[in-house]
Image (cartoon, rainbow, N blue to C red; front, side, top):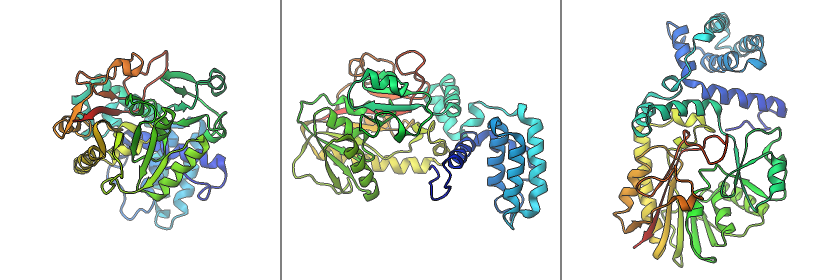
Length: 401
């Protein structure tokens, strides 16, 4: 999570601090291997902030050369001296960092060090070794800024320095301004949304005015897409703070939707819907380019818990549909348990698969599977020249029998 103005007042310092933390997270694997080599006896006991300072200092020293080696060494020493529990380890910190300087060219940066062993094995089986190596590079590269345009505008695209990639999604590779300072933001001419995340809401194919429920709607990107498509949208969200963000985003865009605060597992609509979009809670492993910490916080038990919740939500979403209504199920996950396996289960629960085709994606066939689902991942290039990769997403489309 980005540091706030309350934590660091100067925006320049805040930007450097956020960059430092993100860099340490991106290179968490290689830095962990290096620490193991440098600290033969392991981390010292009762060492206070030693480990966190070491990881941040190594990230700056090895992967942020523009800040200077001397700065990394000096700041590490200052951080250690400011904590009584770590003051006695200043010399050890300095020695470890100087040894890291000498070994910097020996640091291995590939999928085997950048990705956790458990996910590495699963992803190689699911996507192949070559793709997983590309995942590692995508982790290092990070994610560009993808925007969904409220209305097509060549002049706005030029002002943003963006490139069209798919549908009404454009991509900004580099920028000097914060998002709220970009041309068109204040006027509500776009919203932030990864190219992969923008796919599900485009797949309904319902008539204008159809009633559509967006489950787990905040922060509102998919709700905005559904409103733009001409549907009568109910946005369902249980978190009050996220509801407020949803309302603010819709207000900026001048879009209207019914906003309901409720738990999807308890929600019973007064009238059934023609469509339901279920962006289900998931492991979020597909978002690691922008949230590198997620891959280090996932385990089999946690994924199993999410799979059970997803099935409950699929059942509730189905119950909210008119017979013949369309359900779009999606997750920002690379795990087959949350994607392909869930779709197979759903097709036994009163739902029939409505196969997604390349025609639904403006002729883009690469992410469409043989079973008629959409599977994106960071080794998959969006259409166009030099437009880069995208998040990992799974999307399935069903009709209620």
